[in-house]
Image (cartoon, rainbow, N blue to C red; front, side, top):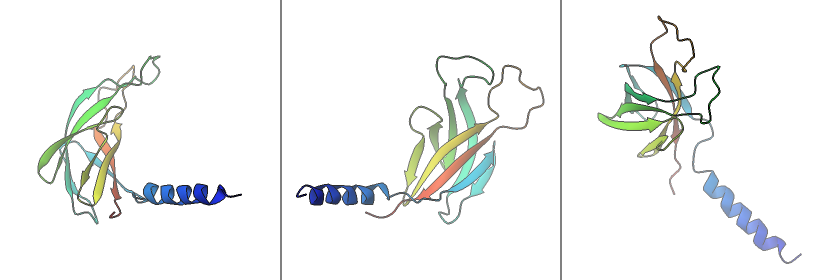
Length: 129
């Protein structure tokens, strides 16, 4: 019974560290070359380009899921984001911006008039330490 106290202290300190990111991030979908202003972070974010896309096409059998790399301009400066590799997120003051999706997803039979490319990001508030 003496070991219960140290274990419970360890777990309670561990939970405090895990809770540093907000549980309900704000999600935004940004079309290519468009700019949004995220609230409440007040960050201006523009989807500037799709640098590379090696994601495994829908319907294909691949040995690796692949990766898409995009460039987002945040507060006037360009940042690279990846879907699988790093970095998938960047921190700006009290906010973390994370790439969650790049559309359209590659297909074995791409449509000639597919919708314009867009990215989906999430913005989390980071609790002060």
